[in-house]
Length: 318
Image 1 (cartoon, one colour):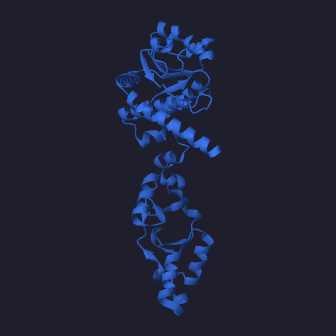
Image 2 (spheres, rainbow, N blue to C red):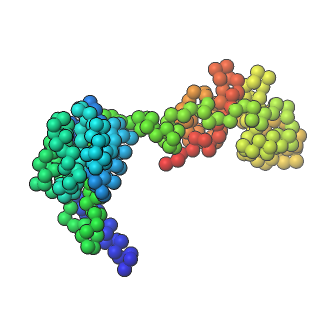
Image 3 (cartoon, one colour):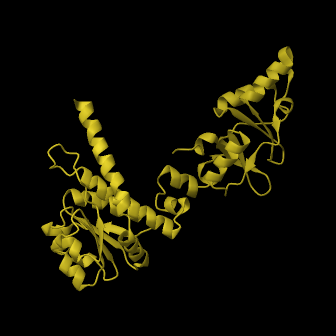
């Protein structure tokens, strides 16, 4: 019974959302164009469940290139209307289009000549008639078995808000780099904005060995460094090569009993992959993937070793 009810609710909401496609029309396009031409912000407002959906729409707008904030209609009516500037656009949500608290702020908006975009399920409602642009978010059936709790209707408003946000993103040419600037704390922002120098392990914390270092000592350096690598450094502070677990394995297979007589120069991988500290992490990740390496030696303009970037600092986190 529980699973059946849940599946039915999802099916109902999915069908109602699918029906919205035919309502993305000229009115929707004109509303989007008005937002694009707006010199101020999009002020989103709604009461109850519509307000909760409005908060999410405002947040999506703000993080995707359309300056926006949510304003509670009751708080607006009691003094916060001063937050709305004449150049702003108002996006008001009310499924019935007759929510008292929302309608109370309409005269102020009209007097200040703020364009109103209404999301309702009632095209002939008071809010729809007062709006310059009306977006039809009506549904034929709520997923609630009593048809009382807003379910399909709130989902429809949320999806229509997402559709508007996406349309605006595309119209503005909003890129992943733009998105990252508004999300510097997220993994995408970190990769797109952070540079190798921000994530590398500094040279003073790296296991360095010389070309003459014996195999047993090279093993100790790799083990002690806990990075799976030892860097063979020349007298000029450049990287002559690296020795990884794989290099050790291949040296053992090749030399057998003579392994412990080898030195670092005989085991190392020469010309290790290097990178500039100013390179962005997203580019470092692409280099690692393309060249199938798990570490990059970070060097300065003269080739001196500055640090090491292990794969774990550039790995994809979707």
